[in-house]
Image 1 (tube, helix red, strand yellow):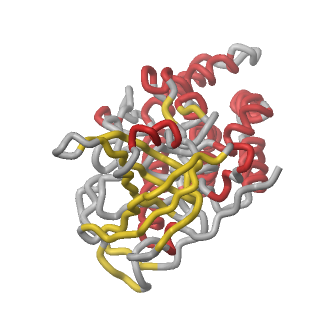
Image 2 (spheres, one colour):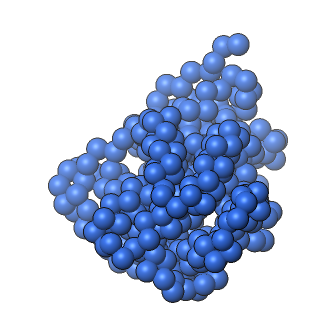
Length: 348
């Protein structure tokens, strides 16, 4: 089967350029002009970024060609409107899934996923408490779980919101937990490291990964990843002979309090040293990842101000650098589609 070819990246499109290329539809909605004529609004994406598009002619006929998740062949004209580049789409047709290399369209983690997964399992194996170690290896020893872990994002829109983001984020938080355990001897390294490795495991059930863009599952919206994670952990604990109930409660407390505040979705507030540490480490990695992606997408190098970031309630002073190919896009001037549960200052 021949793979359809892509010619230009979204980040390379300039005002006035004629465009004929392939894009992934992230969002599609129908609207009407003041005269009652239907039109389509699309958000198109590839591995380099996103761009909005409008279909003014034959909107009703083309709706079936461009549902969210479809790859489409587009003929369009790039136009700047109020300083924002858009595509005026003249023709559009859907491309068969079998002809598409999804890696061209989906932002992905930049690290070596296989090496990252091995390091994560190595950290799990370094846990000294025998019950927590057995629990971690039982979970991460499941082939299907690890396959999903390598693919899952850590969030829908905010930090690490790309393929492999959950693995990258979890590994980063676990590395931090391992490091500070030697700086603060009063911390229970086994408990903190187990909490770091498992704090977001429920996101494997919070999202659907059958197609892109990833969306919340019904259980994900109704229950949330912290409770789903507790269910996964408890199911494994039941199979471990003699697992202390009190130890299980401590671990569950870390999971349920790692967002730090009730308004950020945590059923519990941190009440243990390890819970405070996990909350801070999780928040640190999330915000560093967000700022680093912003810095990779501002124009030019050197320190400069971003647009006002609604989710952090401030302007940011970032050092511009060339973003990595395939890194997930952010729109510095927007609120980035913050989920209502992910409040300002995003406690994730």
